[in-house]
Length: 171
Image 1 (cartoon, rainbow, N blue to C red):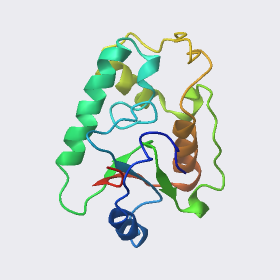
Image 2: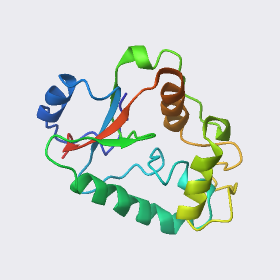
Image 3: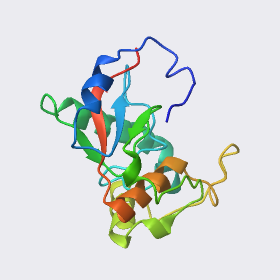
Image 4: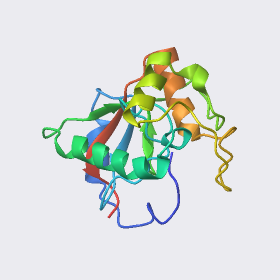
């Protein structure tokens, strides 16, 4: 799955993709981007398990979560992948059998997340719980990133391993 936008219509470094295809330690895999990981909207990574837009201080935490995931990616050992709950970052590859019982759903799907996951995000983001804001282009009560539900369904239904490679495909 790929977004055909200004993030991914750059020069392609195919080597990380070739190496990734041979690996068996992932079921869904996205890649880092240059100069930093940009797709915080689709990202769920412990303790930020849900959408940062559905908690207080979201604009502040967009930057904090970006720095958090970049620190995690930069601290990986060579060849290591970063486990997460959801990640897209403009391009993800999937092992189809793990995603057959999953579908894209852009609604707010709290039902796919445990109370512990929602609480961990609320605590990490210093929020008083989930909020629903209308951002104009995003209707907070109704909308969330469709990748989050897709990945979480695959994790629940098929025990899919969602990972992020620290390697960069697009420059």
